[in-house]
Image (cartoon, rainbow, N blue to C red; front, side, top):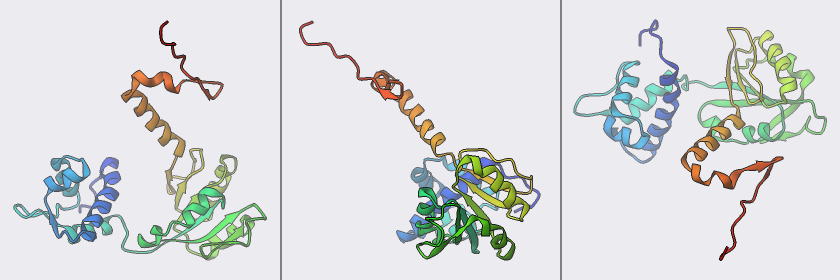
Length: 234
């Protein structure tokens, strides 16, 4: 791939989907697939698939399609999944604990090495073998250990300061579950995960699709309003 070529964010966002679907194909012992067949599985046009992959060299052969294992491994390299990444979690609450307990991270090369929290009831416990440290120890840990990604699952009131501290200490990647957009130096990359935004997008689509039933979902003071049903015979 030409290192000077700018890849669009839309293409980059589709790469993990290609990787996931190709992994499923490998598990099903499928050795090759055409762009048309992959299109049917992913609900992306075949021409879009070819355009996306041509950004990185194409990988396909006319009349043959794509070698599934080869393409899977190439996309793995493009995504940087051919090495291990050390991660820490700041915030040992429900979301933080759920992420630590998610075993598929290790399969992708993402290893959570430590959790940090301010709650004394959590400090000292282990979550699937990962120790929870007092947040006061975070600076020394980051200074003495290589951290690729910091996962922020703490309240928004604390997230901005913690993010700025992490950037100052040399952390270049942050996966932000805190409900606030972080302002960090340009050389620090942030991926924001707003769970409620995703849910609201889903609800918008539901209301658009089933607009005639919207009355069933009306709220008053945060509580559902039960539609008034006319009695038979009136």
